[in-house]
Image (cartoon, rainbow, N blue to C red; front, side, top):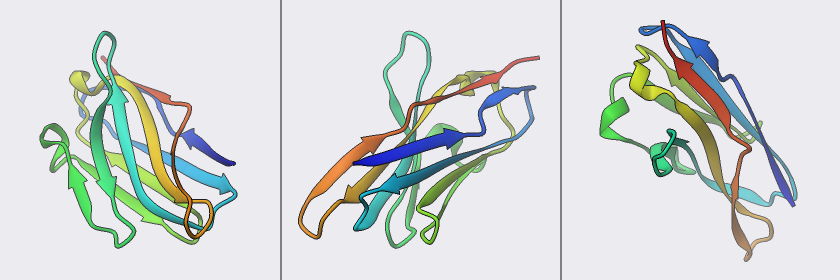
Length: 120
């Protein structure tokens, strides 16, 4: 199986920055897409940012210009640099990784979630 370990959440004031990390380990043949989702209280989980195996990126309109997703393929790790944070960014952030556990078997895995709270 594959384990995803997230880190980097916390409490930050409006305008501040945080960097989230998500490291994948276990039975990994190769990793395809890596992304970050968030879920605010009472709302659905939504895509924040995504990066492909070729490092193409896609962002939600609400975070464009403020958040940057990146990946380190050697470490099987995806990052989310969050700048100019706003109270509406408050949510539990989840990483999501698409993994080939064999050459032909593809599965999708979720991290445990990390809380990000933006408040003064």
